Image (tube, rainbow, N blue to C red; front, top):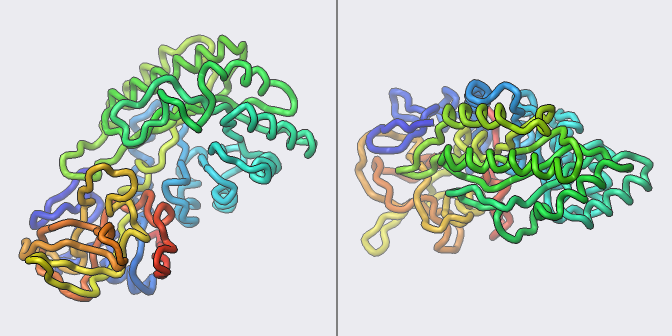
Length: 412
C-alpha cells in the first residue's frame, strides 16, 4: 500500500481525513470508533483492507498456491474468524492459538502447528483434534508417535526442515545456520521415511527461510531453493510429498524509503518456479504462510494525549499508550536502528506547526512512539494514530508491565 501525503504527514493508503481534518478508519472518524469501543488505547483493524490484501494475493499468485495465515501475527478472535473465510489454512505455534483457530471455524485438517517446544499435552491436543504437527526434531516425532499409539489415533505430521540457505535481506533469518527450529536437511530423509509408517500420516514439508523481506528477487531465490530442496529430500527418502509449505517472508514498508514488495514480480517468478519443478513434486500442493504482510497495514493503534511538556528545549506529547501495547512501534522488537512508524494526529490535520516527540505512559526512556515528528499544534485530548499496527501489536508486547490496563481491540 502506498502512502498519501497530507501536510507532510505519512497517511498510508486506505486511510484519509474528512473535511474537518479528522482521520477516517473504514469511513468513520477515529473518535467515533473510540467512543464505540469505550476508551483508549485502542487497536482498530479494518476488515476491508484485509479482504483487499487477500484479493491482491490471489490475483498475482499462481492459482494452485494455497494461502495460509500465520496466526502469531495477530490472534484477535474476530480478526481470525474473518480470515477463516479468506484464506486456505492457519499456521499456529501453541495450543492456545490452536484453540482460537478451531473456535474461529478453521477446520482442523487445515491447521498446522509449528514450534520447537511443544509439550506432551499440546501434542496430544493436536493429535486428538486432527491438526497437523510440524515436527521439529527426532525426539518430538518419537513423543508424538507414543502419544498417538496410546490414544489409538493417527498423528498427522509434516517435517519442518532447517534449510541450508537464508532469505537474503530478511529482517529475521530462519535458515542457513544452527537453529532450534526444525531439523537439518541432512537429518530429514530417515524421519520422512518413518513418517510414512503407523501411527503417522505424512502431510508434507515445512521450510521457513526468513521474514520481513522487501526484495522480490531474494524471496524468489529462497522459494526456488526450497522447491529444489523438497525434490532432493523426496528422492533421497523415497517418499512422495503431498504438500510443501514454502514459508513466507513477504515484508511490509514500515519506514520512509522502504519500497513496497512487487507482488506481480513474485507471482510471475513463482509461476515459473512451479512450472519447472521436478517430476517428484508434480502432484504436490504448495502454500505460502503469511502473517505480517496480510494484517500489518490493516491495523491502527489509537491513543490519547494526556499531557504536553517541554524539557531541554524539546516538546513531548505524553499519551495513555506505549510499548506495553505496541512494542514494535517503539523500536524494541528486533529493530536495530529506531525509526518512526507512520504516526499522525488523528483529531486534526493541516500544515506542520510544531516538532514534538510522542511518548507513552511508562517509566522508561524506551517508551517512545515517535521521535521529533512535525505536525499540527497538538493539544491534550487529541488522538494519536500509529499505523502499521495490525501485526505484532498487543499480543507481542509486555502488556503486564507496570500494571496498566490492556488495550482494547475492534474489527470494523
